[in-house]
Image (tube, rainbow, N blue to C red; front, side, top):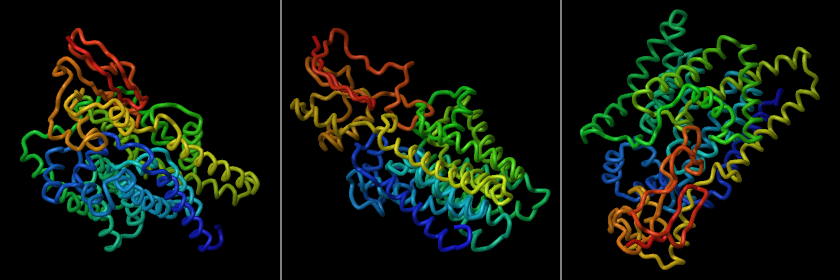
Length: 474
């Protein structure tokens, strides 16, 4: 790898293959959770209806739904998630390119290893939502920014503009990445005024598609954006978010994510020591400043959720590349023996693989088991008319797994139970640092309120945050 480019290309191919296997293994084993069923519902519509549905829903811009509509082979679980797997593999290639420019071949391999195995990225790659696509576009954008900052190129400028425009209409939080890069370009204004002017003009041009979408969106009135469930963050959430970006602990501390986080933090410290100016720019402009800015905004309108910050992971990968490059220089100077350096590399790979395995086996990454609930309801001969739901969103996953006629029945809440009914409830809250609904929040009740005097009979409870009860009411 140090002497031959073919060795680096083989290593890069292995990393991309690992990203594909880790993201794609048993891709359809878990049920679609509520948010994924929105993807299913939207992408089964005709094009005008799809755009109108995304406009009414207002949670995400439309590009991801268009992407899935074009490239998903069918509406079952694995095909719906397959476009996210493809985005993850492309993101791994982008991370390798980013690391290669900042830290040579060693930095490229380290950055690619992080991207292929990071639990947060793997969770997104196995989810039929826009996070993996937004993260992939973000790492490509950051890689082009780093490259073009040293040598402006019209071709690379076009690539940066395209990645920026596509990212902005994939997920609203992509704006955080764009703002971070604008801040980093402004810091160097005195030394590179020409680059600052060019990058600012490029950014303004790339925001045009998002501006058109927002204007059309606002014509519906006052869109809710689907963020009413998000709580106001406290100051301690900021370091926890940075720790989540380092190790992907997903709200529950375990040994693999802790070791991965410590390894990445050690690499970042090495980067600060070996290339302080570049590393501090990435740390402050790419991680601290955006996290604090969103925290301040969230004191008035909460939007602070860790999975939204996935678009900042390119800055973590960049700092890891700088740190590994600094370690490589120490090896060349003889500060570390070849045996020690090989042992560190092997340990890093093992830690990364152990952390990636948690996405497949740890309960904290489990998706809501609507498939299991539907099987339970069928086994008890439950009818659509006897179902009562704790919230309207539950209609979509039950339509997908239980009965396609449920939509036509309309939403029926617990108060409409009558004498006999089946009540289905979904845990109404996702913790700030978790990725799925399987992480419980002790401060909020998990059971809904039902009419006074009702007695519960047979019940079904899943650790993934959904449950059902048979109710008998006076």
